[in-house]
Image (cartoon, rainbow, N blue to C red):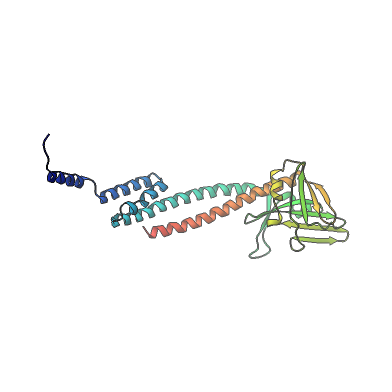
Length: 272
């Protein structure tokens, strides 16, 4: 075995070390890999690779800046992909909306700033004037609620309803007198109308929608109880109104997402 002097050994180590890839080359390899991931639509992986540049190569300021610009390109492509998805979903939901609303009549609000409402065709005032039933209402923002309607020869002064079947039930909270709890009379005929909006619903509307196939009953709770069996088409009206509400709500959410995404895309384009 030939003897190698320590000096020659040191030179050999230095030479071999100098032959390895530089930090600049390694950083560029990471950038190239991130670009490959971007082209493959693997956005999260691309961002993770770019994020490691400043940690692994803090001295490569130029490459880190290239990484920052590349990160904008990654997010831009990601946002454009999201926008395409939101647009396609909105088209689908609009078709669902057009199909569902065929069974409803839309009534505009009483003036500017007031919200219009959808009511099932068989629950209009014109065909439900003199009956006691549970009415379903959806406003144009997608808010969904039920209303207990009463008609009789004397007031029962109800402020809540209990919807039930054998072993299961849901009960609204009492609604105080006011715009959501009203009474009318015309000679011997009496009417009561109570809206269960927000917390007053207490799960009653969804209970009807989920159990529309059952023989549901309603107990009107007031100074004296009053009982009815829910008609099949009234239960279906609540169920369909709930479906309409979900579609309108999702449409509004998609429209908001589209607007926010478009704004972000314009901002990103300025920074590339």
